[in-house]
Length: 217
Ligand SMILES: Cc1cc2nc3c(=O)[nH]c(=O)nc-3n(C[C@H](O)[C@H](O)[C@H](O)COP(=O)(O)O)c2cc1C
Image (cartoon, rainbow, N blue to C red; front, side):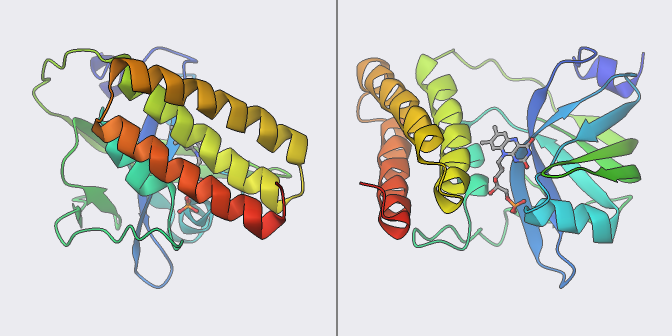
């Protein structure tokens, strides 16, 4: 069995992870990104070429692919350098063992990976990585709440809304804003006054700021 098989990967299926890397100036960075494997030996990351993660993979040639289940880590790592503060605590990262990259401390599993091939497309790159080391924690039972899934979906859409508004693609942005409204209604029903409803409120505050910046009303 390969490491990916032991981790529960399925060929061709995208699994959501948090990619942690060092920036060229040595600053640790983390961002949610999907990873996929076609051969069950290597993983492919598809960062937008505008992302810091893309630059870090290109310059540094390595990363940690962290797997976590909690929506708040996805939210925390999706947005940065913005008006809502999200500085990482001192104990958020630790150094990976086999590569020059940070890794998240509290994870369910991780892969330490090195870039073997980087193909740059118009908007996105295809970064093929080999696995140098991996670890899986003892898996914990977590009761399933629909609010968790809805929050992660809302965070994904929010990262695209920001891009669409920056590029003046208003109808695409509006379509995703409507989806987030649906997720907010779901969260209000299944997880009122929860961590999830708090995150959705913050996302809406961010969207209002982006709308104002792009003069979309
Ligand atoms: C679950 C999830 C999956 C995502 N997948 C990707 C992806 O595959 N590629 C990508 O470029 N951005 C993806 N994003 C958006 C990035 O995480 C987001 O743009 C982030 O701010 C990039 O950070 P960076 O500039 O530090 O790399 C995803 C977001 C979420 C919440």
